[in-house]
Length: 142
Picture 1 (cartoon, rainbow, N blue to C red):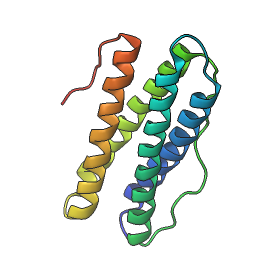
Picture 2: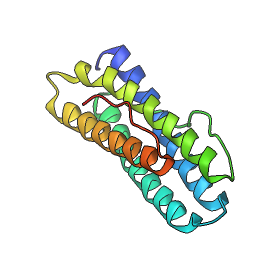
Picture 3: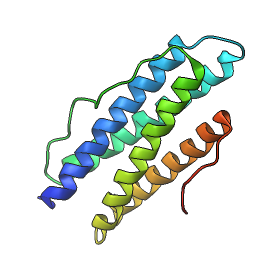
Picture 4: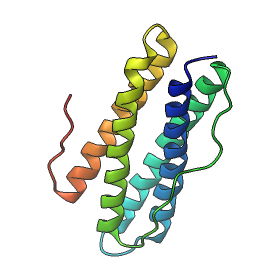
């Protein structure tokens, strides 16, 4: 079995991915207002990315001999576009923080390292996109 701390962090990230997928889909269905349709469509697309991240994490956790988490972290619900974008941006930034903790712990396991790096890059893309939609600067260091 892999390092206990690594498994703990991977499961925490998995719970965050579940939360993100649920939250993005819920916001996509609830938001309204001028020009909401393209934003709702993009939120649904990002939810799909989060589902893929969760599937990857479940597979890797299982491969490491551990049991994948099955519940999400707390889901924030809103029906307003700007609050939705803000809460999802904050969640993406939190995800980046945890993946940056996980990634160095993956050394020596190239498949896990690649998977985590790929997810991290997609989370960074989500931050950039949500930041652009909100008209704010990103604080991501590459």
